[in-house]
Length: 294
View 1 (tube, rainbow, N blue to C red):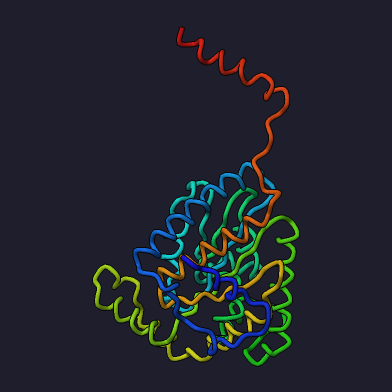
View 2 (cartoon, helix red, strand yellow; view 1 turned 90 degrees about the vertical axis):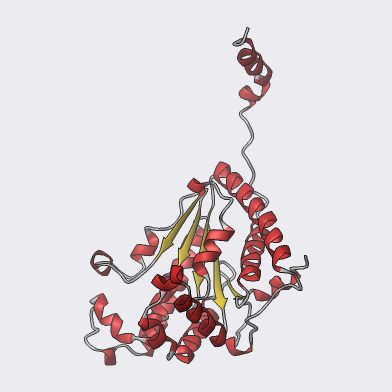
């Protein structure tokens, strides 16, 4: 399967989301896409074992997307072949009272993956320049000095927040965290169809909220905020990838393939060599174990 076009998904210059395709199938059937994903995710699982043995890097996978973009199912399918102890998923929802007593990045810092592990953020620190930008009144719940009303939240406030996010990602990258950020890009029509399926399928009813329809009315505002956030924070050490996601199966292949291709570039991530004293005595250890049966 030719997935070479995934190299174009990386944001290296300013983009307009309205000009970026939301659909991809790699000219492949669902069966072919499923088989490709199985192969790639198995290789990713093997890589995580090596990452753990190497012990000097961690991997942070950030997933953002409008409601129904497919984040949950992507996590389930892409990381299925990982050792359960090798990947930790955090789904960030409305901040708790404890989280509000800290700065907005605190809960993300403490959820970062340990060396040797993958961490997946389902919704991320970017909610603080997305949802709060569309609904600036939410900022008032952060109890920030000098912010007494929505009128106090000006352009300088958002500029500082973008700087803080860039500094956060630079700091963790410089200390061994490999950062990947994926925006699951779907069309408004595809979201409509997925919301209808939630209503039609009893097993998916629980996912639906009337609030989904209210947020849908703000589609253009969200798209503008996503576009600005991506353009202002896609850096060499923490790049954004805009993934066409109207086709969920192809989106999963895209994310998994990008991760594998980029992680393989780190040639220093290798299983450690055995201590020389152990290596020269391997045959003796083998004999010792085999003799236990005699």
